[in-house]
Image 1: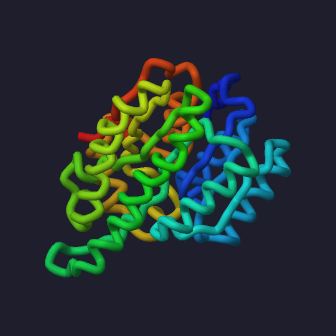
Image 2: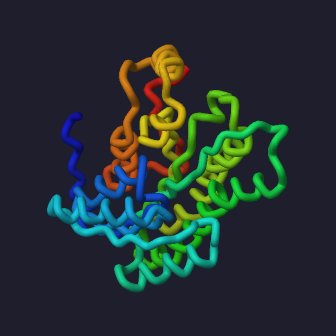
Length: 255
């Protein structure tokens, strides 16, 4: 892996990340901390999240602030964000990373299952954006990065409600960019391809999947969490000062 780019503008910035305890989120927490940012994140994985904080601190980076929070509980999420902002200061950067891609068939979906998918993948994105807005307005700047998915672009089978919630990410980003932009706040989507997180490897990556990835990606090799983090760091930094309302795809050229 190449040495990641350095972004001086991220030094000392306050970052809030959802789902930071594993997968792409874990890499995001470590990547922002390595830039000298003060990272706060929520997750439901207590042991993994605590261990991540220890690793980051031992590496000589600012120790992240972890709070256990089920993001489907909007009141708890709002309270947690308010408490962290009170302690750390207004957030400069928001990364909406958390999601659940549980597989399902259309004929098996119940109203309760549908609502739960929305409660995890869609509703929290709006309310985290709402929560950071007053602080970013006070500062006259901010960067919000919402993670989408190539699943619906590729018309993947096996999780239609997930695809619907992830398609909504592009609409949220576009819907907020104009109003938030008046206050110097940028809102963008990062759309990952099939990223080789441990969860993906454990549950769904077999020889057939590897062959499919080889056929579908223009670029050879595995797409890794750090590939996504690299794009998120760029969009969080001042280097992307005139980028907003856009969808930045990191998928190895999936066709």
